[in-house]
Image (cartoon, rainbow, N blue to C red; front, side, top):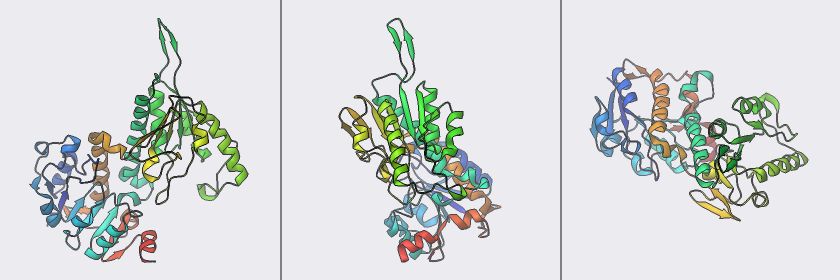
Length: 373
């Protein structure tokens, strides 16, 4: 029997993305599946119902009760989980570290859930890596926010009124979001520096036209992981970084650790050395922020320096963010669709490692230990 794949209108505040776009819905239908969506599910991302061909439409309750596979962007709340049938397959961002009650509810309902945050970082799963696709959008948008707050041009301009020097942008963290921020700031004409505790990112930063901030401290450890720095190394590293923060017109911070508060990288004293009119855009605001003064969802001005704590940046570019995310979901789900029917191969490491709950159990061991002890 063809799998019934469902998608909802997202309820979370500020969430404009949708888990299925017309292109992906069409591909699922051509693969033999059926697609059931809540009316207006794509309106926040500017995908009207009329853009979807071959899709069946109903209300939220109908999708929750009838879908064999439910695709979401944000985690379902307890009210919606209660409407799911036992055996329903749920795929989306599930925030297992923060949503313990919801994880318990999924376990108790007998829902098989896959968290897109848990997709393993292996070559075969790159096309499923929703964290990376959405982080790239966040890095791009963060630079535009910084440009809007600055009362300066980013590029150098030569005019009849004289030459305007380019803005100095510092990006802290050279992961996917950081690298996209570097590329975007460079394209806009800024002079870009970047820092990451992993010296292995030096060449990536340089390839995008940025200058890597050398602190004289290496955090390289065994197996490619960063090691714990000594107190002396931390002090030396922070001194160099604070000097580059003070010299920057705009600082983009991107450092976060799943399931833990974001590391504090910019303390009040460092911020107070920045020039009036400078701006910090803290992508890690939702995890507590990389700056001591960051408040999620707010802009704090301290000594004429703006500290912007944006939340859910990908949703601010909902059209493209939805396209990218829906393709991630399609690539994740396709190996489990055989002639349109659902057949999960539990020997596949992608499914095995990204599974959060199944058959009344919490399958992700760190989450299970956190919840059950």
